[in-house]
Length: 421
Image (cartoon, rainbow, N blue to C red; front, side):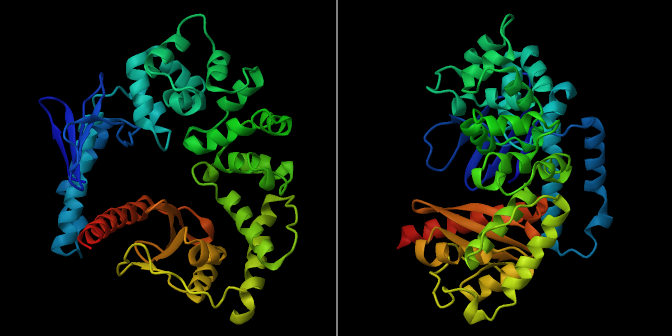
């Protein structure tokens, strides 16, 4: 997405897919967007990722990268052009972000998503919002997107936030307004959630089961709560699959903050157990998890292909989006089985969803790294699902960017082709 920084106004302008996005700078951040079908500009909450470190130094480093020709060795002209454009886009974004004080950027940068929502809340609600961001990041995250949690939705969310943050109100008042138990224990639980683990989905799952005494008791004994812990504890089936010591050990693993790899391994194991008709055993030690998972995987894939699954002869429908040289649709059950074996996850369990329900489609990613992608159907549209590396590990941001760019252009081309038909 080409990006332009206008120094005279401080605005950032981003282009892509026929859409123009304008970001006004701090101290009054606002976003507008206008697409091919829009008759006028509309307000949006753009996707941004703020840097936490000293931005002057980052700008200096970026300038050095732009002028460093050694990084372009071995590239063709098109690759060099793309690299320079990407570097210039990053520099322009840094110039826009430089308007934001570091004491505001740093706590917001810890979150992996909805940074604009938090930035807007701090800009419009001042120091009390920033204080909440430091003392209880997950609570601040939900308050900045309060229309998701508070029912009915309020007409003026910022006015409601300012009312809840005024002198004389406390965090338990905010909890109650958002639908959580207004208890001190619930406040402490939310304060221990790692900012990088915050997503709307995870916190909604927590809201659904936060009044369960077992869930509260488990979370109250943890000093740190990450993505894997939230995924396991808020799932009735998964939380019965592990002992408390596993949860404690898992909560300390920073590698589980953004991507719940261990939770995905557990779900993989459950699918494998279901496929062979056995009851999953409980995991008492975290160190045993990878070993048990790999043993189950080897045993399953050691079977003859014809005996591996009752669905081995089913046919897959055509892929919803065309592939490329490095993003290939998996069009039959044997290739799906091979993908699971190579990548050490049980993607083969999606065979019936692909062929019968037709709600999922799987692609294998060959570059910039080996990975497996799922698309999920929502009505008539297909959206990006999970993107997993080897053994359900997270993939690099470069791989995500590659997949998103493919998805954007493949979806656009498919739409034009459908319209022509």
